[in-house]
Length: 392
Image (tube, rainbow, N blue to C red; front, side, top):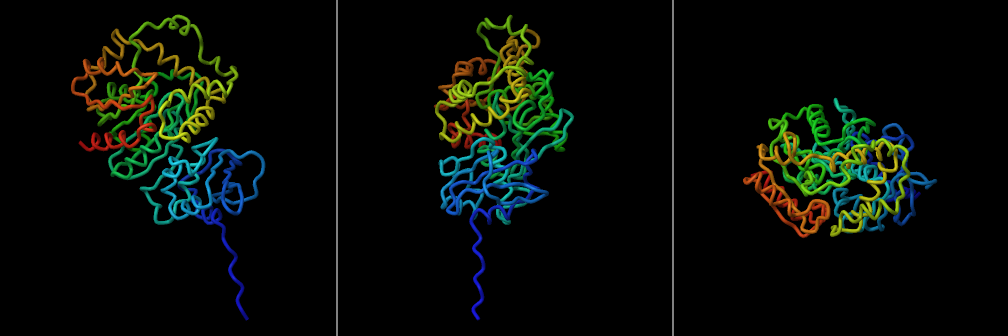
């Protein structure tokens, strides 16, 4: 009697069976991830208890992962290749990048697991619950995103530095991504700096290097000025700096409350054009599309919209001079700093470099042919420079 052959286990089933809730767990009940492009057809992943299950597609999924059969098979063998597949356009992640990447991180092969693998967490802090992703072991590097972005805009940098002996941690600042969104917070550099300190305290980190893009760079500078003992080195990627030119809208903005964003409608086509304009020379269309999705995921909620307006308002109204002015205080910054500038940056003109050189003659500088998000537009050059700078 010939024994019956064992039933074939599909590629997607093999991926889902490895799911480890310790590495990632969806925050919302009923979250659904759709997997498209496999030879056996699209399926949905649903989460129950500490397990994930493959089911027939139903309704609208929260995150959609699309790839061809060969890429899915490659991901089953090595999930670490997921970021490379995404950057090359072979893997698409839409709608909720946090959910999609978190699911992939939690399905890594057994030999990829452990304290050095990519993991996601919600961290209770004195500033409220903050969402992080981290990878690697070693000296901590905390990464801070820009206005309207989330921690996933720093995922390539997390992967790059984790592979070089760092504990790389990217955080959603309060008001953005999957972190707490208080209605009446100040949402200025000082407020965000206190939140980063609260995260360091919650993680048991006494001192960390900081890498920040745009708003995140400004927050890193603020923390370096206020609590230099908590800061090692600063990698500042197109950091937002106080305006030196006239601000004609300042008197009006001082009268407008950001909480109006709780009621204002948010037209996606207008927002999408603005977000895409911020990354004019990106390393791939997928990052631009994912950036739009991540921005809208928070902006289309009342609290996320109010936080965005409050932060943008604080950036515009920041005083450049006077006792508390950024340019007055900048010369006191003690932390070794690397400034990365984009020659085609429409938000932070490269002319700011001359002002920074006057205030901080010991700082290092790197100019790149890119826009406002160097780590996505010119990742190889940025990561090479950061690796050399952080280990100097």
